[in-house]
Amino acid sequence: MSILPNAGQMSDKATRSIRFQRPRPLRYRPRSRHVLLAILIFCLYFYFSTHTNRIPFHKSRIPYRIQAKFPRESAAAKTLRLERRAQVEDAFKHAWKGYKDHAWLHDEVMPVSGGQKDPFVGWAATLVDSLDTLYIMGMKDEFAEAVAALEQIDFSKPNADKVPVFEVTIRYLGGLLGAWDISGHKHPILLRKAKQLGEFLYKAFDTHSGLPVASYWWKQNTSGKLPGEDKVIIAQIASLSLEFIRLSQVTGDLKYATKIQIVTDQLALTQNLTALPGMWPIQANCTGTHLSFQDRTFSLGVLAGEISSLLY
Image (cartoon, rainbow, N blue to C red; front, side):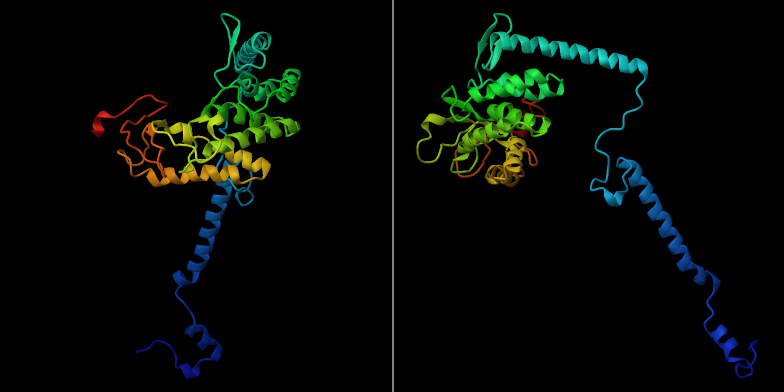
């Protein structure tokens, strides 16, 4: 028996009230969802705003901090740090004076005999590689003098028949581009010389595979493709991307980055085809039309911690 009155005896308003009334838990559930969603959004906002240099996450392209958050430096720690910095600065100034006095415009000074040597084709490797350090240490006069000396260096003509492409890239091209960036792009000669060197090194990629030669005998590159090499240390061809891509960025010429992309693509294609899938051996074979590996020796560091016995 129904406890409700006859529907005909109830007003339309009451009927509608009963007809559309929902149980209490269901009535408050949508509101609970909204509250939970608001709490979640607040938590995300708080997390990202405190982990991205206090920039709200919707205004930052980087979701996490890159630089470590250092603790507050005590007075004692600051004193020790400045003392150590002064020692490093003194050591560099001593080394730079020795280079300037005994090996100016040569690659290296010989500290015992006071002589000089040119193991990196004689383009003043120490001078170019030290440009950014001179600027960072505030040695602006020495920096300006070294930059002016670049006019005497022709990066299109090495002072040696064989050019080690890897060494020249990291020391010279990296040195010029690093100095260009760290000095605020105020010295056009740095970019001009970087482009001159880039044009020279670009020819080292003229092989059937598109991979650069490790040793570029530049006087022999008169016509045709350069012969690829075997037993090439993998780092000699696989770690040139930083300098060449940056050269494309600052010059607007994509051809340098395009050459590096060939290397990257061939590394990607071979990574799971080696004796230890996921890693590349120490040495590579670049004589064919594509990168290949016969070496079964792998390294956990720079030619250190070699592992090979388990792979035979």
